[in-house]
Length: 189
Figure (cartoon, one colour):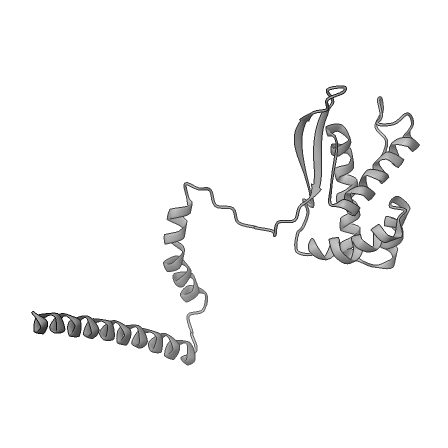
């Protein structure tokens, strides 16, 4: 559990704050996303991410540590079997906070905290670099492959030669088909 902050807390006491955060984390794992105040969302995020990291380890010690926070065994089972498997490749950043406006009654800033469901995309390309990046990598990748492995096996060379021959043969067939179609049009006229 997070160390209670000095000053104003989410609840009346440190124990109440721990209970609030534990209940928020339980509901987040149960439903996948919850709507709460921005302050509570920011406070529950590190707790939820720490619990997911423990679930990814998957051993009995970590399961018992998670059970000290999340009291519902069904939610803990869901966390260890489903949620942890989903985030197996992700090194962190399991949650997302999105601000959704103010609450109607007291104008408190509200947010939605949710588990990230998109697959991990390690390389992000901006829109301005996308056309240049799409055209450039093919020659660069071939050059890197040649520098990394200068001694290519004979099967790779024969595969490349066969591919080149097949492409040349297809082009020749397409050219002869077009020539035959042109001759047929001339004969009809």
